[in-house]
Image (cartoon, rainbow, N blue to C red; front, top):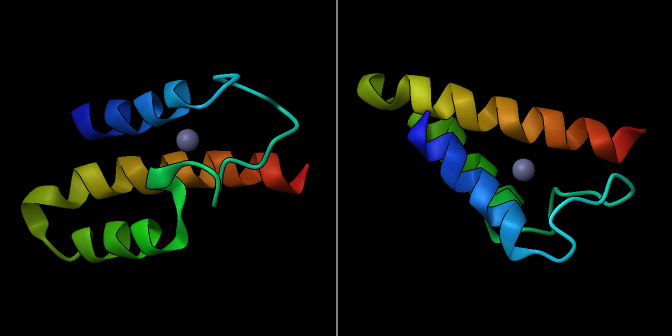
Length: 68
Ligand SMILES: [Zn+2]
């Protein structure tokens, strides 16, 4: 949960913090495809699995913004 909030801080670094028309994936440092690959690897580490699920859910929701 804490880690997912850190990813939200990533949004605050951008200006404006939230733009519905912008695709977050590939824009924010923690939203690059390499970062998503790292989150997928975290899924395999049992203690970090919940964090990874939170991060990937965040990426999924941000990714939906790209589709609309
Ligand atoms: Zn995001």
